[in-house]
Image (cartoon, rainbow, N blue to C red; front, top):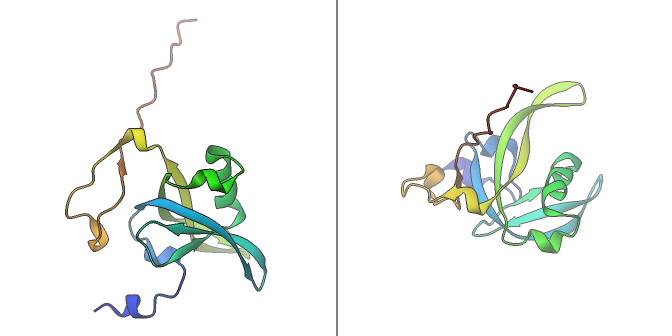
Length: 132
């Protein structure tokens, strides 16, 4: 038993992502919080959800489109990254889309004791032609 799992809560937080993890979006719902309504990602095979801040919402929208219904079944990577909140450096969640056509099958012994949806191949940009 892990104490962190006993007191995990309903939502993922940055501390849950020591390493990046890969998921499939099941659905997106709008939920009310003390500071207003926010979109919440439900992830395939996960009991906990991800509350999307404006930065993560816009990052997903820019790739997947404005209609969250179209986000269903898309592969994403969630990781922890340094950010600023109220003038303090803190860890925050970051979300990015992983194109499932560029993914490979994860190893059977993937981190966190659960198989992950997909692991991306490294990005190799095309060479730049400076001969002009």
